[in-house]
Length: 106
Image 1 (cartoon, rainbow, N blue to C red):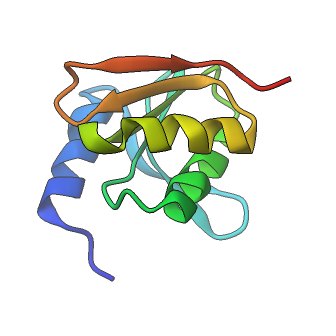
Image 2 (spheres, rainbow, N blue to C red):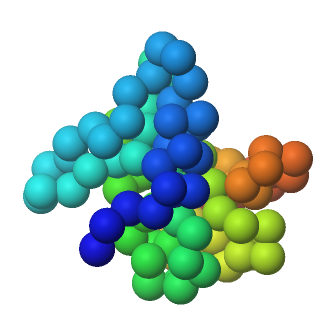
């Protein structure tokens, strides 16, 4: 499925000037954006399975800071998906006005 314009622009905005987009991971997967310390995934669908897949990609990134960016109405689902995958990080809304820290489950 082709990437939407809004997803492409959100990726490039998240990466910033020094960051990169479409970083390859093991298993023929790609991470949306990375900076020197952050791994950023953007998931606009709101589907819990897709949110968990995005969280797994963040987990496999190896970066110390992990950010899952979703629409504001899906922030609670995204936090739950990160806990299900057992990673900590940040859930942000698409506009960047709200953020929520997620602690790793023990």
